[in-house]
Image (cartoon, rainbow over all chains, first blue to last red; front, side, top):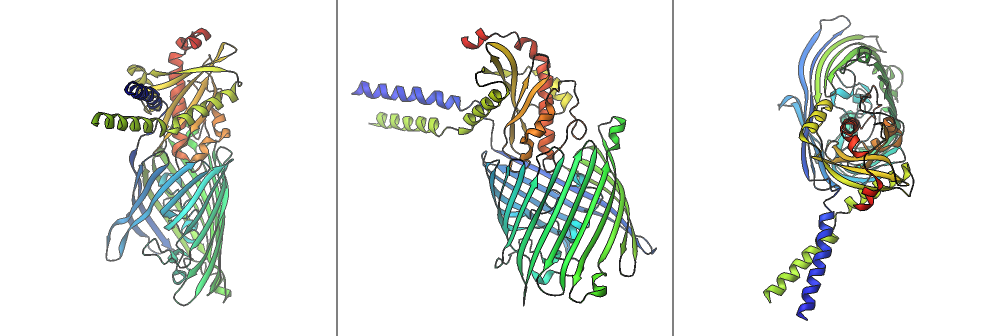
Length: 358
Length: 195
C-alpha cells in the first residue's frame, strides 16, 4: 500500500511538472503598470472686427494616464487632467476623466465600468495634441460633441469583421445646463455625484477594414433631467477619416434635437484637409499644412425663430501647419477667421502651440 | 502523518499548477498553426526553437529600428512542405499601449516576407491592427524596404500606437532574419524529425 501511494505520488508529479514547465513557453504576458500622458501649451491671440488683439499664454492641459494590467484580460485605466496650470477660486480644472476596470474577453468582446468616455466623433476618445490639426480642438468638438465628454457608466465593445462597435450606458446630462450659445456642453455632469435617474444611451459603429480609413457614426439618447422639466435629446453624428499616402482628410457632421424648451436643434460640421510635405523631402519629420472649414449653429432651430437662429450661427476657415519632429511631439501654427451670420462680426485668430504625448 | 499531509499538499499544488494552466500559450500555439497551414497547406510540418539573440546583433537591430526587443529571444519556426524547407517564421512580441502584441512573420529564403500576421492582440483599443488588409501591406517587404507609417505603411486611426509598434516589430524581425537566415536554411527535414 505504501509503495502504491509513493508510485501514485511520483506519477502525479511526473505529469504535473512538464505541464507547468510547458506553460512557460509562449507565455508572454506579465502584470505591468504604465504611465503615459499628454499636454499642450497655447499662445492664443484674437481680434474682433479689427479691435485690439487679445493675447494669452496658457498651458491648457496637463494629462497623466495610469494603467495597470493584472492579467491578459483584466486591466485598469485612468486619466487625470489639470487645465490652466492650477485650480483656485473657480479658475482651472482638475478632473478625473477616466477611471475604469476593463475586461478584455476577446477582440470581439470587452467590458468597461467606471468613469468612461462617451463614444462619439473622432476627437472625444482620441484627443492627444499630435492627433488633430490646429492649436485648439475644432469648434465642432466643443459645441456639437462637447469634448471631453465623460462620466460614470459601463460599456461593451469589440471588433467584428472590420467593424468596431461600442455600446454605452452612463449618467445623463443636466437639462438646465443647455444653452443656445454652447448647446449641450453645459449639461455634462462629469461624474460628480451624478444624478442617475435618467441614464444616457450611446451606440457607435465604425468601419476600419481598410488601412487608413475610418468611417462611422454614433447616436446618443438621453431624457436629460432638469429642475422643472425633462428635455429629451437625441444626437446623431457621422465621421469619416482618411490617413494614408501622406494625405490627412476628415469630415465630421452632427445634429442634436431637443424635446423641449427654446432650442430645438443644434447642428454643425467641419472638414480638414492636409498633406505631409515632409515626404517630398524624404525626411522622417512630418510637416503638414492644412485647411479647415467649419459651419456651426448651436441654435439652428428655435421656437422663436428669426434672428435667434442666426445669432449663434457662424462659419470659420482656418489654415495652419502641424510640424512633428517625432510622432509624439507637435508644434502648431494656425490662422483663421470666424464670421457670425447675425451682424456679420468677424473675428481673426492667430495661434501657436506645442504639444506632446507618450 | 505529517509527511503524508505534506505529500497531499504538494500533489494538490502540482495538479493545480498543471490544470490551472495558462490557456493562453495553447491559444497562441493553435493560432500559429492556423496561420501556417492557411499560408501553406494543412500537411506542413514545423518545429519551433527559442533563439537567444546575440547581444551585439540585438543592439545593432534595436539601434536601427529605435525599438527594443521584447525579450532576449525570439521563436524560430522552420516550415517543411513535403519534406522541403519552404519558409522560416519568427514569432515575437511588441508592446502596444500597455500589453504585448504577439505576431508572426514568415520569410522565404530570399529574405522577402511571405506573410505577417497578428497572433494575439490583448489591448482594449486598436484591435483593427489585426485586419488582414492592414497586415497584407508587409507582403514582399524585406530588410531594405521602407517601413515608415504614413508613407510606406498606411496607418489606422484610433490604433496609432499599435500600428507603429507592430510595424517597427516587423521591420526588426526583417533585419534580424537577414543576419541569421543562412544558418536557418541549411536545415533539413531530417533535423526536424530527429528533434
